[in-house]
Image (cartoon, rainbow, N blue to C red; front, side, top):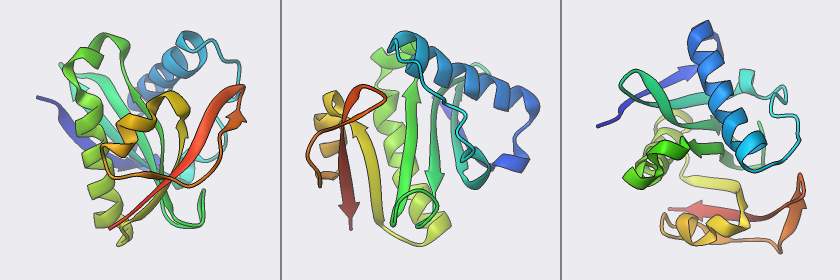
Length: 148
């Protein structure tokens, strides 16, 4: 079982911030061999959805209100620790993220910029492709949207 929490940037402890940035860097920079600026100045506007197992952050996403990233509310930096992916916690993470957008921003319209290889994963959560494939940091992406 994961322990879930949602925090605003100012509510994150320095240890939580360090650990979530470390996880993002491990996956998006090192594992995906992609040199890019993860710390993009948007963390202060986001809600941070954190899933912990044995006091370690193993699942994470950042959530934005409409207008803070896209025109619609959005979910980004969706990540599960490599050693935990066999547990399918990514699905629980997305369910929690979608519910948190509804609860905190009072909307069910959500836009994401998804890595192309994860298209089926996001479709399984109700997202539909709304763009052609494009490169973001040299990785093929598609924009997807859900609206309940």
